[in-house]
Image (tube, rainbow, N blue to C red; front, side, top):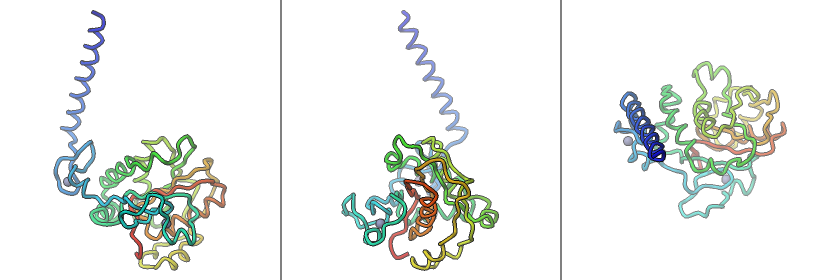
Length: 254
Ligand SMILES: [Zn+2]
Ligand SMILES: [Zn+2]
């Protein structure tokens, strides 16, 4: 019977797929970066460690600042009520706590690009992506590093994180049109007000972006002053909507 022939063909395809898939798993098995057990779903993370991650479940709907559990979904933090940021919305997958601090620091300071792959996969798989830019033309902008800093580090962690997102959504990454023109590495240790002052004038738009909706990707958002300054410059250049997407958002008073 011809019908049976079709089924047989599908079974053979499925069989070959499973053989190839198992072969890839055998040759390149994933391993949890945190505990060393086998990874789950093609990621270097096991189910147990995934459940231990500090997901940022209750957060300010404008700036993604972690808020106490039980706060309503549309809550806006005091700071955003007083002085709303230039960006329109922000999502942060995690609160900046352990073990996420360790995962990010390994990437940034020990050049563990395998961490970038895992963190990028987690970011691209997060539910907040579904809310961004449905039916719009969107561009991904990893926060640019100052060229001297880029030379020292050898890579921009925000670009590494944004790769998986670009692959999943099909939104292009722009790495040319916006640059960092001043080194602001002294940001660490400054309070919110000093950070705002220090970051002012750090970015320049070399050429306006063709897309009107920009998704800024950063690894860690501390006070939000970097994302806000970048947003100020982008809005001035004609961008209409800005979403800030970060891996982790520091709780208040950092
Ligand atoms: Zn694990
Ligand atoms: Zn806020």
